[in-house]
Length: 232
Image (tube, rainbow, N blue to C red; front, side):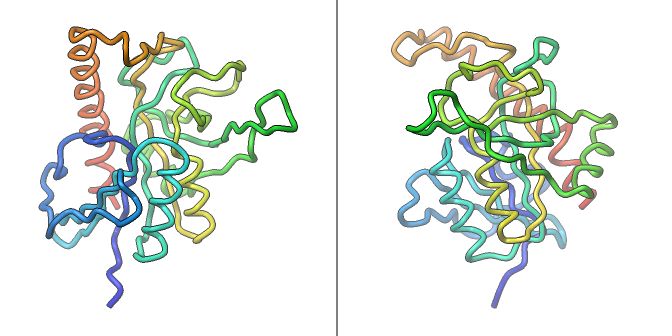
């Protein structure tokens, strides 16, 4: 029997959507750890008649794309949500700001070209985008760039609001399967904040970064994700 889910929520890192299970939801069964996808964790949650699936993909193109294909070839979600943190490419964006990503571009590199190339934009479904605007109470649209590496783009893109590492790859698979999708991100790193190499991270820095992460993912859950799911 094919189980139809009201939504599948993709996110990259543990607890990037806030608490698990989502507030008011109950986890059904045990987490699923797909063979061949070592960073992927799948959970099924219910609230009343609503059944959702949350999918932790791991960071980056390969993990996100493989997890999306695994899910969409085996399950039948009515909608795809992609959520998580991002870095700001505009000075006016601050930590905790929520952005509805539209359009979404991807930056890639080829041996033939010294400059990075932008892949054609993909767009969320109009109805899901409108619902997100209704939930947030204002039109917080921003152009999004999916990058390959956890570092700021070398090239300046004046039109880009935020950067992250998964949205384009998951959204492209959703489009291929004709499943409506929406990507919403919350800013963690303000404009061009220095990315500290792991070997230079002190315990004090790690604690500060973890506390900031918890704070902004809670903002994402409470101000967007839970109200949005309630309106689906």
